[in-house]
Image (tube, rainbow, N blue to C red; front, side, top):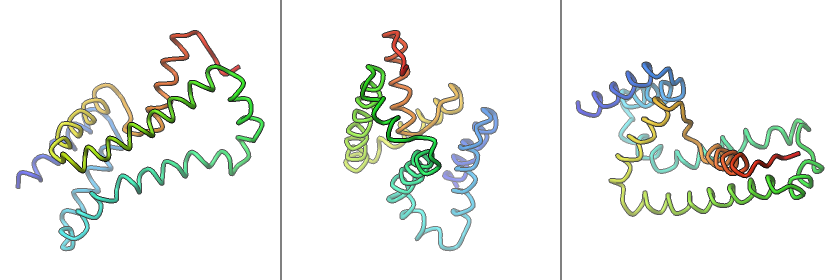
Length: 152
């Protein structure tokens, strides 16, 4: 019963914060939890869900290449600007930190409670987005803004 109340609280906060992603996530988890096979599916989703999510984000990131919106010339021009190098460094930093984060979650699952709470607060109250590549982009934006750089 406690898990249902917790999920309902998250859903209510998501509604108040008008966060569609969190509303969908909480709703989907609640629907799966209500199904008879939930005991089998929820642990699988917990253990593999981050990888599935990263795969979906990676697909979305690769679509502009598939549509021709991003070309090799764009890749080459990235190496010609300080902002491009900062973006590369931010991407590498997020990837490495994410690896350590996954290791941390495996070693100390109790940290998940704090991460979930912090993520929900950041997403709902500060209009954040829970996504690694977006974090790298945000880091890049902050650094190039502080340094007065651009990609042009």
